[in-house]
Length: 418
Image (cartoon, rainbow, N blue to C red; front, side, top):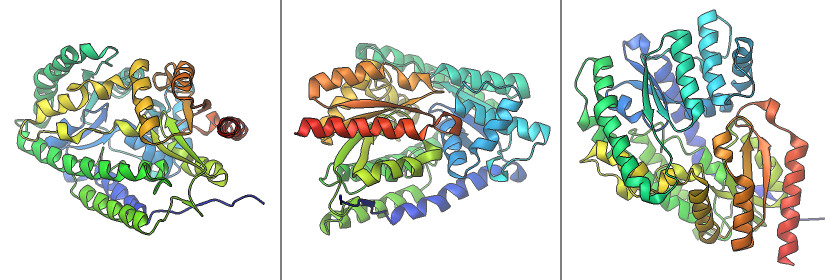
C-alpha cells in the first residue's frame, strides 16, 4: 500500500473568513449609512478607498461568491437575462447579481451588493470593457474608464507608465472628486499604501517558506490569504493576520512540520492562471492523495511582489510605479514576460512540473500556454500539462479531464526522475 498523504492545515487561515465577511457586510450596508459605493476592475479601487468610498474589486467579489457557494445561482440569472455562457464568468456574476436586484429575482442575500455610484473600469482585458459597458447600458451606472496596457517589450515600460500616471492625475482623481463632492484625499491614500507596504513585506517573508523542502504551506493557503494584500488593503488587520501567519510558518520550520503529511510532498508544482475559487477543495482533493502540492503561480504572484517600490510620500506616482516602474509586473501578462517569471520560479521554488489552468471564459490568461510549456520544458527539463476549467462556473469543470491530465503530469515527472 502506498503512502497516505494528507494536508496539515494552517491554523491562521481560519481567521481570514471573519475578516472577509466583515468587509463584504460593510459594503452591503454602505448605502444605509449614506456612504458612496464604487465597483472596480483592474487595480484602480485604491482611489475610491482614498475618498472614503466603500469599494469592491471584480475578482474579489467573484472569489467571495465562489467561496459562499452562490456562484452557480447568480450565473444562472445572468444567462436567463441574456449573457452568453462563454463570456467571462466574473462579468456574468456581476450582471447576474445586478439583474437579480433589478428584477427582484431571489438569490443568496450575501451575494447582493448595492449598486455603485461609480464603476472604475481599469481595463486589463477586453472583458473588463464589456463589463463596464454592460453596467452603463443596462443600469445607467457612471463609468470611469482607465486603460492599463500590458508591457510586451520591457523597454516600453517607462512610456506606458507615464501614460497610466497621466490617466490617474488627469481623469481618475478629478472624477472621484466630482462623484464625492470633495478634494482628493492624498493623505488617506498614503496611509493605505503604508499599510499595504507592511502587509506585502510580511507576505513576501511568508513566501520564503514555499522554498523549504518540504514546503511549509500550499498555494491554496496563500489563495485564501490574498484578501488582506489586495481588496482589503489599508486595513491594519491585514498586518496582524500576516504576522500570525509568519509566526506559524516559522514554528513549522522549527518543528519540521510539512504542508503535506507525513513527510512532505512528492511533487512540487507550479500553477498558471486564475485560482479556481469555487473549486479549491475539489482541486486540493485531487492533488493531496498523490503527494502533490502547488506552491507558486503567476496570478497569485502578481499582488505587489516588490513592496520596496511603495513610497507613501508620493502615493499616485507610487501606484503607477508598482505596476510599471520596473516594468516587471504588467510584463508578466505577456508570453515573453510569463516565460521569464516562471523560469525564475522554477529555479527559486524547485519546481517539478507545470500545471497550466486554462479558463474557458478568460482567454487573456491562457495566452500561449502550450508554447510556454514547450519553451520551459526545453530550457529547464520541467514537464507541464494544461487543465481546462473555470474559476466559478461548474459547467466548465470536468473531473475526469482533470484527473487524466494530472496523472499524465505525475507520470512524466516520475519517468524523468528515473
